[in-house]
Structures are given as C-alpha cells and as structure tokens.
Image 1: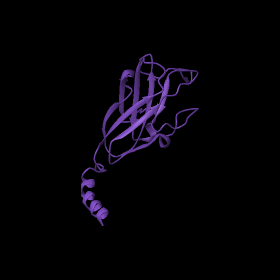
Image 2: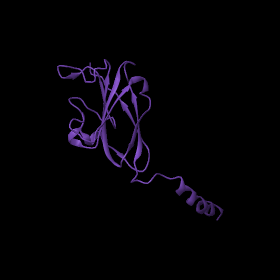
Image 3: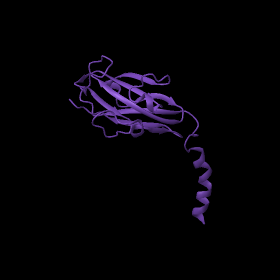
Image 4: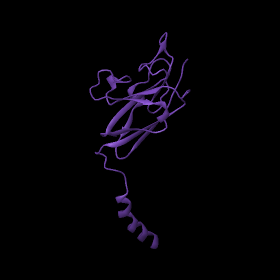
Length: 147
C-alpha cells in the first residue's frame, strides 16, 4: 500500500517535468565526430524535403550553416517545427564553401544525420531522416573521408 501511494503522489509531479508538447518547435544540437583536422569550416545543410537532399539546392525552407571546425563539439542549430528532417555535413577543410572532389570522389569529409552507411553517392533522405517532436534533439554525425 505504501508504494502505491508514492506512485499516486509522484504521477502529477512527473507530468509537470515530462516531455514538451509535440506540436511546439524543439531545439536541435549537432555534434561532429571523426574530423581529421581542426582546419576549415563545417558546411551544414538541413532540409525537410527529400527532393532537396543532400545539398538543399532549390529548397526555399532550407537551413544552411557555415561553422568553424573549432565549434564542432556541440552546435545549436535553432528550434525546428515538428517533422522529419535530414542533414548533410561537409568538412570544408580549405574553407572554399564547396565540396572538393577528384574524379567524382570527395576529397573532403562528409557525413549525414543518423549516420547511414553509404559508398557510391549520398544516402537517401529516408536513411538520414530524424524526427523532431516532443523534446530537444541531438544528432552526432560521424564524418567519413574517401581520399
């Protein structure tokens, strides 16, 4: 009996400190792992639209960030309305604001939300999709180098 009273007492308190309502914008924080150098910028593209992934070209609602590598541990990217998103990151080591390639192979590091496997071309939006709903979201992206 004593235990059930505690549960009854704690239940209203637990409701007060629970998750945020699922219809409110929630903060997104991104961390990056596996950088091979501390030089350059992280070019980040965030989109809700599969047709505009991974480079956000033509997406009127895209969010694009250019952040110094020194801030890669925890980058707040603002509050996002609920929904499905995917992000792509380029480690732009020479800070020229583009992905450098050699014969179509990236010379700079790339990574995607949810860390899907990829080999020839970027992963699908679906593979990189993460949900924003009911609380803060953190994505830790592993950067992959091919050359």
